[in-house]
Image (cartoon, rainbow, N blue to C red; front, side):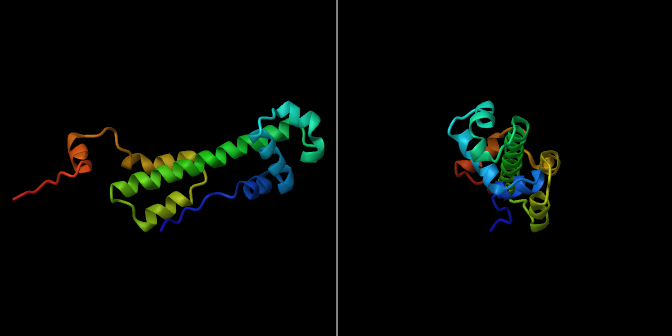
Length: 131
């Protein structure tokens, strides 16, 4: 079982920007529906609690950052797991990373450069038997 849980985007953005969760939720919902930042800032003030364009952009940038960090952690954990090299300590250090760069630094030694013929053979079910 993995230690990695999906991030609570509303809580993290709320904590980071000191905003109410309904404001963040409104911005994220409106952008998913296709509304632009200027439209939200001008015509949906009642829904966002009078947020201006700068704060709306900060919310969207922070959402992208949080989602990218989570995806990088998942990729790193899955990649290392496929190589049978994931230890509980290594997984915990990946989960605890706060930046994308930190995750990349941990994953760097485990990242596969290219698939070798041996890797492809193992994936297809061929096993190497040595005497």
